[in-house]
Image (cartoon, rainbow, N blue to C red; front, side, top):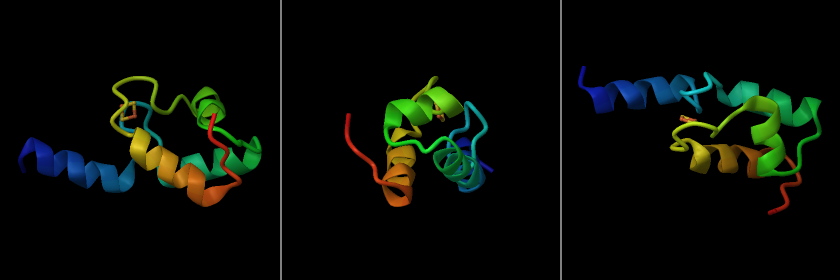
Length: 71
Ligand code: FES
């Protein structure tokens, strides 16, 4: 399996590879901490704190799950 295929496969399991967070992890944090912004989600989960390639998907999950308000 080539590197790009491997990353694509892993991304199906984990949204943020650097912090090891799945979509379920992010959704649980949004509910648990009543998160309303990207910065809050980043603070509580440490998502998007390294390479940042997950930001688009993280924002998509955040928008889908709660009353997301842009900072
Ligand atoms: S994959 Fe999320 S910060 Fe790198």
